Picture: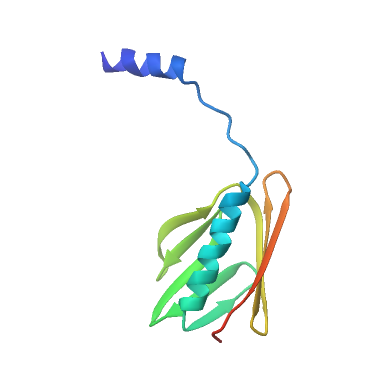
Amino acid sequence: MATLILQIVLVIEPARPSSKSLNPMEWEVFINNVMREVRRGDTTTVTSTKVYINNSGSITMIEQYGIMLRRRVDYSGHEVLLHNVKHFTVSKIDSMIKINVIDTNDKAYEAAFLSYNE
């Protein structure tokens, strides 16, 4: 009986094709979350593909994982922050952090913000 109900639901509600580009609102939420995390941290270290935020001895890392960006705390866990990411780079010049993302439709996104910690 459960199989029949599942089949009926699948016929009524077919799978929708997923968009391969970022939703602008998702991008804004992602950037605001990263800014908040960085500003709460004691120190921020940036490599070309990762952000490390030290907050009272706990290390939060933001990195690309497949076609998504994820957040990990103390090198464990897996919180998805952004989907459909083809390429992610980050740089830090003085107190300015710049994030560049190219989505799976080759659309580029860029954001820069000040980090008030070292």
